[in-house]
Image (cartoon, rainbow, N blue to C red; front, side, top):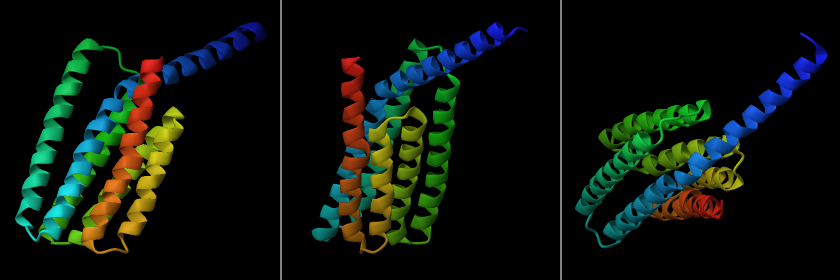
Amino acid sequence: MSQEETKFSEHDAIVLIEQTIKSAKSKVSENGFIFLLWGWLVLIGYTLTYTFIVIEKPAGIGYSWIGIGAAGFIASFIYYFRKGKSNKSNTQLGKYFTYLWSGIGLGASILYTYFILAQEWTLITPFMLSMAGIGTFVSGRMLKVSGLTLGGISFLIGSGFALYFQSEWQFLIGAICMVSGYLIPGYMLRYRHKKG
């Protein structure tokens, strides 16, 4: 193989990598919907939880989170099912995102269940913010999208603060983190996608 062929191949590889990243960014921009969906749902959940604690009606907390979780799961499933039917091509980077968020979701579900059974209420919010922070930060770094990276950092900082406060204040911290970690980056992604 000659020197020119090697340089041409290296150039082609770089172009292919750049196209793959652009394609993945485009797909995530469309998936800004998921950040917005879960950002709004969890923001509502944290706000309802805080309200139920303040008005001393704790029974409403569990029901609100069950409803929010079910609504989010169903909406996400329908969204990805429809998206999967219309988009048959999937990049390797897209698969990594699926693995990342599936692993975080599964691990978070298991530990969330443990915290509930063990009645470790004050650990739920810091843990969930940490999981969201890791996924959002890694997603932002992989795609080189600063809004997601900063959103992930805000979740991680919020998680640290939540460890030092009583549970009712943890929910306000969680609500703030949903705005800075999911909603702002989600709207930034949506804007970027519409802009082209």
